[in-house]
Structures are given as structure tokens and as C-alpha cells.
Length: 346
Image (tube, rainbow, N blue to C red; front, side, top):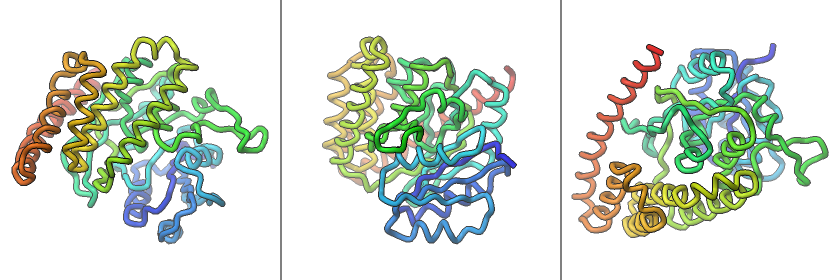
């Protein structure tokens, strides 16, 4: 019997997290899915942990050589039988009703090719933080997608398989007729590049759900050099987007770069690197001062956090950060509740 969902989970050296990720799929309130685990040549115990699950819905596909996240997702798409493809990074996990909510959304919204939901943050140890990614959920065009990437992370989207068919391309790396969907030349930013290509070159729309249905793990082991690599990969995505969306780039490139720099400043804050955070947020404001007007509270909050982390004793900064998180989390919960009520009435 063909499953409604194919869940695609790339795996590489995540032995501390992968069991929780798999279990969150097996615990879904809908059982109409297959779970395709793509082992990208893990060198730790990740594969053994995956193999220890005795469930007929699990399919393990092994790469012969390490190819990276984009290639693992491509392998998953090629092996998928489901009508809807859900992606889960193996260090994140899901709310038990995620697939059920997306099933209702996609079945009732035939124009939507990419469905996503808000995400809740958890720390490296898996503790829920009551802080959320709060993107715009509707009326998403290429400009908004380029600047803000409302999907937010690789564990949030659920996509119609026929949507991928509309952007499929061939590569010299594979046999003739074997399709690719994510650009494997990207080691980072491969997801936003794919979403942008879908929205810019097809008629499919993108919409989000108000409820946080993904638990997104914050990795505090990141280094500043990784942030610079992430920024370089984003710039590579921009260079490619000039080919298929030149008008969008002409209008939004500077603002999109500023938002990306602001995002990297927040990442540096999470890495407790005040010097890097100040550098990134200053570059963001220099690139496009208009973000201060367009998103005043978020930009000022990032600016304040960066300079406080850089200037204050760490213990005092942590107290300020905890207070700010409590205030922000409370206001976000109120907005989530209001948005759900609005959607239920519509």
C-alpha cells in the first residue's frame, strides 16, 4: 500500500540525537507514512541505533561515500513513494500531530506546494525553551522568502512530491534520467535555494501553520568560522538566484543580505561570541539600515543582545538574557494562540 507521507531523514554522526528523532516519527498520530533514513556514511554509532528500531515503516538507504545533506535529501526524494514528503533533520524532533496537521493543510489547499509550521527551540540537551520561530505564514512571495526564509529550518517543511517534479534537473554526477532536486554543490543554504527556486519558477505557493510542530535543536558547539562558511554559502545561493530570479535580486538583495547578517549575529550570540555578534549586526545595519524601520523590535533586540554580550560580565548577561527570553516567550505564546483562533474562524 502506498503511504501518504514519505519522511526523509538524513543521518550523519548524530548518535546522541537520532533515536529521539526516529521515535518522534514513530509516535505520530497518523500512521500512514514510511520513514526513509539516508545514512550518509556515519562513522559513529548512528547507523546501529537506526538499525535497532524494529518497525516495518523504516527503510534505511546507505550511501557508499559521504555526499552531504543535499545529496542525502535527493536520495530520499528518489526513494520516496508518498504523495507528501516531510523532512526531518536527525538532531531535531516533531510534535506528535505534525503529519496530521500538514495532511489537513495540504489536502484542503491544492495550490500549496510547500507547507511548513512554526518551530519551538530546544537547547543542545533537548530541553524545551519556550522560544519560537515566528515567521509570516501567508502571502509569501519570492521577496519575502529571500529576505526572511519563513520555513526556518530543515525539519519544518512538508512538500508535495509533484512540486519537486516541477523543479527536477539532471546532473553529470548521476546516471542519465536520475533526477536531482536540491543542488548538491551546496553544503549549506541548499534548502532556501530549493524553496526559492520553487516559488520563483513554478506556480506553487508556500503557506505555514500557526502551531509550533517542530522542535529545533540549538547547537552551541558552533564556531565563528562556521558562521563565515554559512555566509559564504548564502552568497553562493544569491549568485545562483540571479540566474532564475534576476528581478527579485535587483529589488531585494541588499535587504536580504542585511537580514542574513542579522541572523548570523543571533547565531553568534547563541555561541556566546559577543565580538562576532557585534561584527555581524553592525554589517547588517550598514548593508540596509531600513531593517531597523521594517523590523524595529527584532533588530533592536539583536543589537542590544550583541553589545550586552560583548560588554557585560557573562553572569550579568545571562541574567538579562533569561529575563528577555521569558518576556519574548510569553508574547510569542499569546500570538500563537491568537493566530490559531483566527485560522479556526476562517
